Amino acid sequence: MEPPGTAGAPGAAGRPWEEAKAFYDNLAPKKKPKSPKPENAITIAVSSRALFRMEEEQKIYNEQGVEAYVKYQLDHENEPFLPGAAFPFVKALEAVNTQLRELYPDSEELFDIVLMTNNHAQVGVRLINSINHYDLFIERFCMTGGNSPICYLKAYHTNLYLSSDAEKVSGAIEEGIAAATIFSPSKDLEVSENQLRVAFDGDAVLFSDESEQIVKAHGLDMFFEHEKAHENKPLAQGPLKGFLEALGKLQKKFYSKGLRMECPIRTYLVTARSAASSGARALKTLRSWGLETDEALFLAGAPKGPLLKKIRPHIFFDDQMFHVEGAKELGTVAAHVPYGIAQKHKKPAQEKQTPNSK
Picture (cartoon, rainbow, N blue to C red):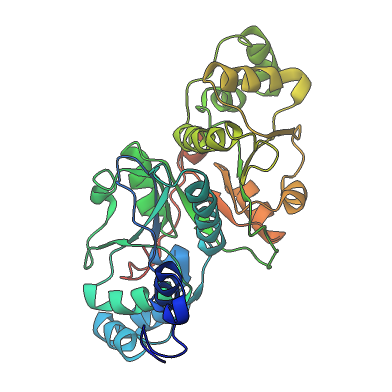
């Protein structure tokens, strides 16, 4: 290729210098956008095994130990991992960021994804190679070399933590951080590449478990009476209220540009509550917080899986494994929120702790 000022080069034969500059700018490697400051961003911390599929590596660790595991990772560090349960969610977050940057070039109110893992730092090379292979924009890593990363979540200003490790998720919830154990669906279901869709259960997810405690202690009839009597008293907040609030804040940035109908974020309340007998309190609680969901679906105890299959969210949060299982069986990426009375006396069996699972 000829340099500037030679025959055939941009800028030759009287071409303006702007054309020459544009020509060479196009030759330069494309720069990724700058990461936002943590205090301005909505930070999503994702474990390595939530983002990527690492079953083979875990099997090696369980059967052969940590040294064989690390050696395998080093020997295969140029082979990208396959996408895991959280991968479509992360891609959707980045799609929203792209549109936000177009509308607000100088704003740092963006999603910022942090990879949280207790992997050894040497294994990080394969993770970095995988992230680059899929052209993901993940600049911040936390690799703790076998120690739990939970103590770092607040330092990273985490708004949501997703992991495949139920014990670590419970630890994050206890620290007051929105968190959920994410599960791969039993079948693949195509999701939107341009619109982030997030579905929430109500009680013990967006709201406290106050009403569920009434159900467990006194039954449904007493629950309906309680909800009617307290219809105008907002429920206390649940563990994921703050995440819905963060999503709403970004939605309003699109609304202010006249893009409500084209907003690339859509939220859903998917609850087993009945609309007539207990739905008003849920909606009035959201209103009292200055929040809303785009859609509110009251199922009156019906299974959630079939409806979620129609919605096709990138992630669905629920506090009861019954609903999580039903969702993932029909292709929805579901995440369990271990909060409230539904978790009482439940201690899920943990797999052997692996460096790549968190």
